[in-house]
Length: 532
Image (cartoon, rainbow, N blue to C red; front, side):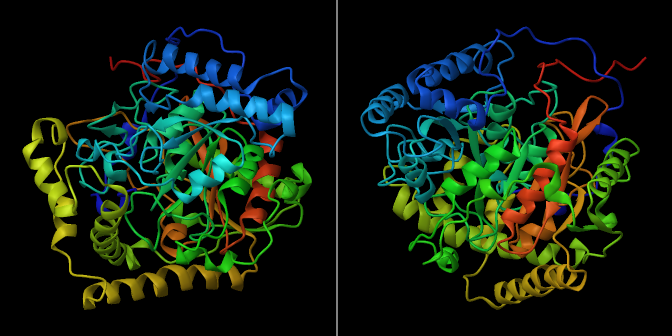
C-alpha cells in the first residue's frame, strides 16, 4: 500500500537538487545484466544456456551485491531448492521440450505471497516467522506450472505499508532496509521495494510485486522499471497477505514491456478462490505479447493528459512534456487536458475502506496461511509488536493497525458509505472520463523523484502521485521509464479502463521502443552534492 494521501503535504525539495556524483560502488561484472526473457529464452531453448547455470549466476549476483558490496538488501530469503528445481526443469526440457517462454527463468516474488515450500511468508514481520503455508498462492502455482524457477522472496515495506503513517518505505523488521539501486542513500519507495531494487539490479530475470495504491507503480517508476498494476481480478489475490480485497492485486516489475507482457500472461487467470477473477472464467487467455507492435502501436491511440496530476517540479514535468511530444510524433491523438476527479473527493473514503478490509482480510489470511505463527489475529499482531517493540517499532509505530482493529465489520454503515463513495467518485467518475473522450489511455507523471531515506520523519512522497485514480477504480496502471531528472529516473504512467492491459502494453511498448530510457544502475552512493 502507498500512504500518499494519508500523509501531510511535504515539499519536493528532498527529491534532490544536484548533478550525480561519480561515486559508483564497484561491483563484479555480470554477463546476464539487463537481459530479459527475449534474450534468455532462445539460449535456454537451444541448450547454450542451462536453467541451473542461470539460477546459479543470479544467486552469485545476489551474494555479491545484495548481501555484500553495495548491500542492497532487496532479497529477504533465498529458495534453498532453487537449483534443484532448475536442474529438474533442464531435464524436463531435454525429455519433453519447454512448457513455454518462462521455462527455467528465475523469478523473485514479494514476501507477502505464500509459497508452500521451505521459504517463509512473513510480509517482513517477525510475527509471522514460523508460519507454514498449506499451499502455494494461486499466482505462485501458475508460475511453477509455467516452468519458472522461484529463486527467492524480496523484502518489502513491512505489512505492505499499512502499519503506520510515518513509516519508512523499504524497511521491515525481518529484512532491514532495502536500498535504491541508483542512489544508495535514497528510498526505493514501496511497498514492493525489494522487487523494485532486485529488478533494477538484475538479481533475477523477472520480479513480482503487489499493490493496493502505488506499491508496484511507485517503486517501479523511481527505479527506471516497467511496472504494471493490473485490473483488480486479472491476477488472483489468493495467498497474498491482504490489505484490501477492493484494491489489492499483484503484478510485474521488470526491465522491459516485453517481459511485462510475458510475465502477465503467466500470472493472469481465473481462480475459484478469488471472486474478483470470475469475469475470466471460460475466457480464452489474452496473448499480451502478440499485442506489442513496436513504435507503430502508438499510432491512432487516443491519449488524455491528466495535467492536474503533474508534479509542478521544474525538472520532472519537462520530461513528461517531452514524452507527450514523442507520443504525438508517433501518431497518437493527444487530448489535452482531461479533467479527472480530485483524489480529495474519495481519499478519506479509501482510507476507511482499506482499514476496515485490512482487519477482515488479515484475520482470514492468518487463519488459513498463518498456521504455526505466534499470532492468529490482527489484535494479536498488535500485541506482538508491543512486546517486541525494540525490533518491530524501532523507527515507527502501528497506529494504522490500531485504527484498523477499532473498525467495525464489512456490514458497518461507515464502511458501506465509504465503499459507495469510492465506487462513485473513483471508479465511475474515471470510467466516464475515459468514455467521454474515447480514450485508450490517460498519461501523467507516475510520481516524484526518489527522496532521501529518513527514519526520523518517514517518507517524503510530497504532493506528486498518479497512483490513486487507477487504484481506487481497480483499473490497470502501467508505468514506463520516461527519462531522467537530476540523475534520477522519471516514470510515465498509462491508465486505462478495466481489462485494457493489452492496449496499455501496446502503447507503452511503442513509447519504450521510441525512447529507450532504461539504464542499468551504477550503485552511486549519492546523486546529491554536499551543501556549501
